[in-house]
Length: 171
Image (cartoon, rainbow, N blue to C red; front, side):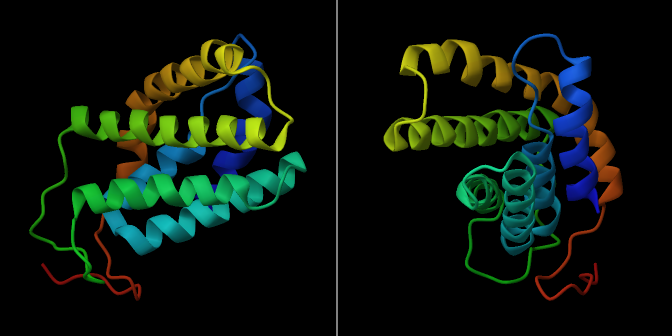
């Protein structure tokens, strides 16, 4: 549900509220929050669903964005909990807010640079310097600013650490 709501907000409301040609990436903030609170598998599933929904809504190359959201979510999840276990450890504390914001910035950079690289390789992108100055950097900055507000709200929406099979971890 959160994926759908944030995808609709990202594509319909954000272009009206944010001046300029780029908008913040709300879905990457969601994927990072899920990676921090629910672990790698939940982050990968959320990233896949968010990317497929976004590609379908934009009538883009189906699967490209989902691959990049999954990569960003898995990167964050394995930075927070670097193990191969299926269960997210209840003993691992939530990172400080500044570290969470840094995860959002890096995850946004992974997605934006990956999208730009894919478009350049497929021949339908802009020159790299134009893409960097006019798309990648403004998107990262706008997403980071919006993450200051959205991260605490999403952490309240997804408060519990869960096992991969969906059962809460007994603390």
